[in-house]
Image 1: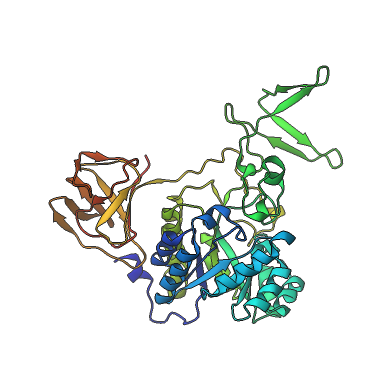
Image 2 (image 1 turned 180 degrees about the horizontal axis):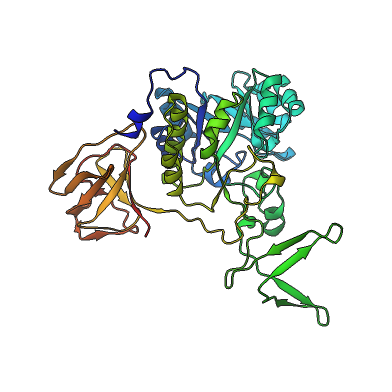
Length: 452
């Protein structure tokens, strides 16, 4: 029995929590929706807080994405959550009007002035308040609610109890929380490290992620004012007022990662979150992350949400699937525990993302061809990853076969034939030519292998 059949239930309530996935470009938008997202969010310009993602999304592509999602009965939210300067206000007005013409389902905004401006220019577009507004309490939530905000994306630092308190006082205000993705060392992005060190402003969408850098310890020689590399095994900093000591560890040849936060993963708390009745939407971070990330996170949390409503929870599936993604280690953040109760939110060892699986290929929208992402050789079998609710059948062709082993689907290649009619014994990630699949797969499927 596949995962979709295990989780479906005729008694599922009509009003479910919404699963919201990142869409860094049109292709990722399609993948996220295919893998189970109810809605996606993204932006097209520097007014969005992901400058790189915005560059991948043109107005034309965004319009196509809105149309594509609406045909599926899904929603698209536009990120206009940057903090504009006075010199940009005319451009901002034009941008809001232009995005409103695309008929998105909501704007995501952070600055009160931008919210009010949008209400004047595009009063028919609902407004969701960005997490950058840092709403943690009833007072702030009430202010934005009175301004006409339909939903708040709560600060990552909010507790479930506080979310419940806001919902109790403002039952018509929707509450959205982050459930997975990168965590900021600062308070939901209110950081100046990148701006100071490299001139890239986090709240303008161009953070350089200086908190992920490798840092080395140096001591100053007071006699000649020179900096000397500190080669001690242990190093501590001390607060002279209260005596608190913080140990800093440096890995030889790499440095230390004193600001590096682990990635958020609340898959183990889905029941507690939904039981609260306070949360209307669960949001996944990661517009600049891979196509595989867009698919796997949507599929895992879709399974978790549907499992909750059907009473058929399979937590091992969510845990294992999310571990296949590259990550900096996982933490459950602050929704259940207060920050001062946590001691495992940072990764001091490395900022390099690691995962348990390697993606070998990505299937195109036709389902007939795939593009190589990692080496595939003749005679090798790779695991098939399917979009949510999809299935395949066993079969053979002159190019290979699809078979099932221990409940897992595999595709084996007996021949590797490219679109330009060349035939290879192996194909590598540098080869951008699509290759023919032995048998069709659902569009946007992946082939992967476990990293030994």
